[in-house]
Length: 310
Image 1 (cartoon, rainbow, N blue to C red):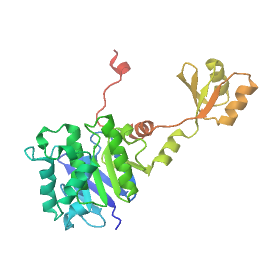
Image 2 (cartoon, helix red, strand yellow; image 1 turned 180 degrees about the horizontal axis):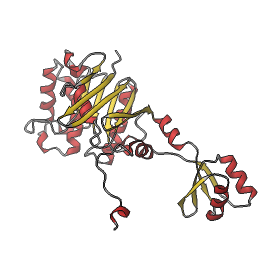
Image 3 (spheres, helix red, strand yellow; image 1 turned 45 degrees about the vertical axis):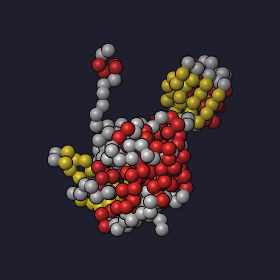
Image 4 (cartoon, rainbow, N blue to C red; image 1 turned 90 degrees about the horizontal axis):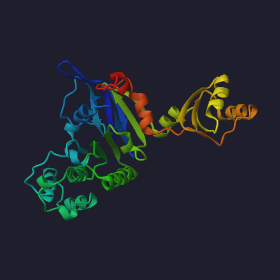
């Protein structure tokens, strides 16, 4: 049965601090949804509300159409990782998962299978207190997978992972979505989600800034931007600016051009006999798109070097 996550109009205050201000979005089965935003944007609070750990002042969060607290076997509906350090350090990895399995009526056989899937089979009998942060992340993901749930929610799962671990978790997330599961992954680093997320929910100051497919988002950011390589940057810039384009230097022999389509750029430069070697539509990155969307939503921002006078 397909199970998604629905967040509808969540509002939440902690004293004078407004953590959520009408947060609404949906996590659909069969895709990885990146949940991204600056620190303090409301990502962790939203996830805690979904799990029933925090009560919203208004709005609701549902898992498969029901509140998480009402689920008879919650780990079999939604697997989650909020804090990789939330474990009993004296327990072995195997016993930590076995205890969770017993609370949900799951078979002991599931423990070995999920430990193998996250690469911890050889560390099953080691005490979790001696694990590195990366190993604790893997153990937390194993716990999320324990009930073979149709939906998963992972808060900053890349933390503490080495490059091999990051490649592994990207492949895991992709495979989980391919199995038809709804996967929500929070992060504040877009590079971690590059090539993994199918959909993005970008948040800032407790509300949704953008809820869109990755392809659509990148296309919107890149629209109308062209990269031009030329041996005569000043002459090319002068010609294109007279034609109404906005031009800026993007390298020693490279210009970034907006406001003029590629065909018109070629025509103008050819007409004025300005040499150019390459013309390409700009390919935006998730990081670029994210920074553009959250520019006004960053809560804590340091001053640039120029602003400090140093």
